[in-house]
Length: 442
Image (cartoon, rainbow, N blue to C red; front, side, top):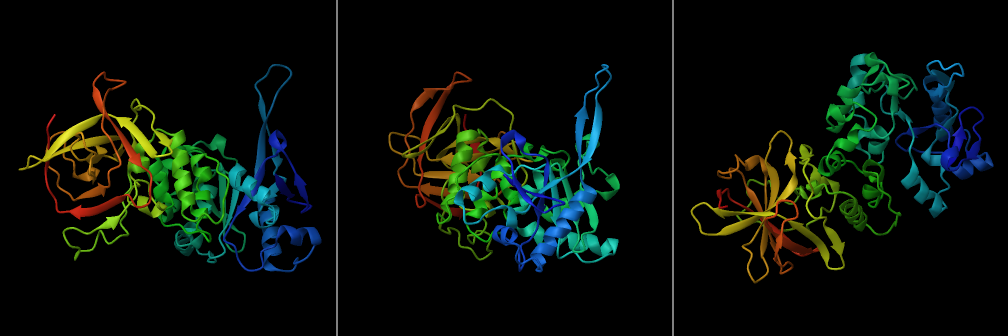
């Protein structure tokens, strides 16, 4: 890793465990950013980019310190040693943009305890107006700044004049070298990001959120390159992917497939696309739309901020094969009120926040033929174990892509159904249906 010395402004490279504590600069790119080549050739040193670099180095030296444990030879309790932070990292100049290897390493390995956030559009000196400008800052709209907000232990915010205006305040002061409850911006951060304060309370609290919830935090953030919609979330989920610029939306699919391999959190399926005319009041009773089983963009999770994972024994692990995604789990049977039509429910191990009922996918009645539909039921419409459905249901019609076979349930000794879905962009079609009721059959 190439780091910048905060005093000499010289580069030095470190590897593995030799990497010292360092601070990253989180910022919106502007005109005249200084590059790695500029620094090497000592050019563009009068531009705004170099001025930003100097401001960052001075700010980090003045406001951040490194705490280390000192061992006492006489057997006394260990003490703390405090020293000035010496190293920093800036994406504009610490990466040689002509090297794909360096870019890959930077995307997958940035892991700093310290972050200095430079808000160029926060210019007011009034405490009231600073809070308003802070919440409205464009910094909160960018994709890469999400992990820069959540992953570091110490996050300090400064305005356009490099004046400290506050920090992300964790609840354990011993974890944070810059702890000052009076300078906490957690309330404003929660307002600007829709991230619940409980996920800001400690250094790794965000990892407790479900996949769907974390995806919702990125729903309205933008990136310059479409692939970065996925790459900027790697640190948020603790996964590694080689960047393949030019793959377009497939990058977000690759991210979800990697999450399926690593996690049993089925909230990855608890998304709902609201950007396909589904909420129009003049929408016909049956409005056709295409929708894959995996989301195409974080915006599909914009209404999933309250989704929480359920702590229960996972089902048989699902797998990605050359034909698609295979899930083996227990199903429950329902029928429509006033109808003999039967639905089988695939229960996901997640819930909608305060509600206790899980999300469901509904499929057509299993038979010797392949099922023809899945139905996604909004968790908010489930009144209890038995009872009617009060809200709309999204049915998803699929072409023949699955077979049901009876197998023993691995945890409860009962029977379940093995369902196999094909992974494709165009297999799934959905429409909104007017509210109806479902009654539990078994």
